[in-house]
Image (cartoon, rainbow, N blue to C red):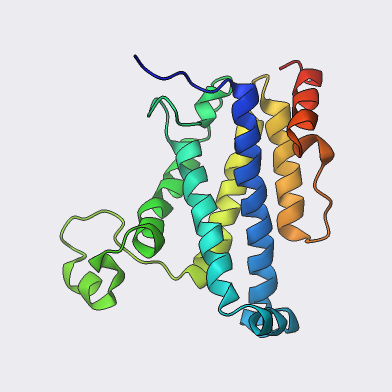
Length: 204
């Protein structure tokens, strides 16, 4: 017997969390990488925490990898939380394809200890038909990756669905947090009880 899906009201709490921490870790990345990483924030962070940039980068990639599946998969494992579960929301095909293009590169870099991490190996075997075996230069590609995920969130919120408003509010909050570390995260997208009240007010 298949396992039941989470009701969208419950699943949305987890959707909020992954977007919220992508935005927060992306904000940290921007602060550390300002002026190509030569700045007082980076210097102080490195003094307190060894190789902090690696931890922040990997946090961004882990959240991004989860959200890529959220936006690009549908009718997968019954326990997956996916965009299509929210009133049939979807994103435009070109945006979906762009997000999918990051997926294997994140796995190569972080989630799978593989020979494709080696630059000489990639140069020798990259024509073998293996998809997305490139290990990207994440110092350059983190910002476009985050921008594309936030674009997917905005695109989803533009569709006709009872869930459009919550996704639009989540996009506004994530975009603000990503660009401003002092942005106060909205109460109605925080604690479970507050989110439930908000969704009830939205008629969900």
